[in-house]
Length: 299
Image 1 (cartoon, rainbow, N blue to C red):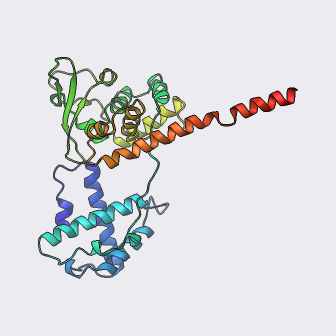
Image 2: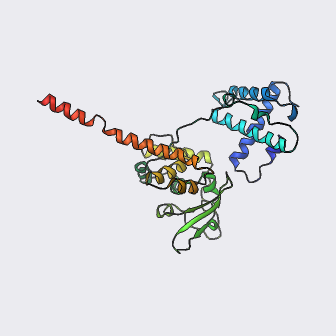
Image 3: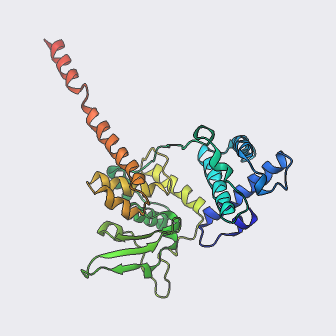
């Protein structure tokens, strides 16, 4: 486990922190079951079930909050990764986490993916933000689909000119997945690029505040724009996907632009767009019944 936690090469800060948090929770569990020195070969299915139950009882923020289902699921998946490595190295004969039945594993939380509609996007564009670089970065990601980590690490040397001599595009390895993505830059996305500074390759180098402060500024900006949704920075990526699909973009193309490993990940956004279409059409429900009722009363 120590080796797994130390292996942080090319990981984003958030992923490295998640690995450290897992190590902390595992150490707490081992002390709880009074087996701090248990060997990998002695870990069985009951150990795994007990660890999941323990995670569900864990709290943070001075005991005010419990770990979310998503966090627990992530920890269990990471433990599965640890034992896959142990299996490859011959330290165990079986991955005990693979022995768990579906009902014994943390369920995937199909949380609603918040995003800005095209009209809401127009609202926030028209609304000033007290930290202009947050506005530029967020809107740039709304029109490119970049994650926060990819925006922060974006370099001018990763922006190239296409063969047509006009179009600019990003060619970049994603921080989280290590997938290479190619993203043509629309005129709208180019509006939100900062001015290039001679000798500095990092595009958003002026965004020096912490990610936590970015979220605070973002919340204030959304409120000022009259957006009654819980919009986090990652919602810019959701916005990029739903905007493109709303405008009729091909699902496969959107999947490639986002760097999704499977088109099934992109289909989630397509379902959201379809649901919004249904909700929009349902706005006319009973509208004409009211008109006929009013005519009847008038008669």
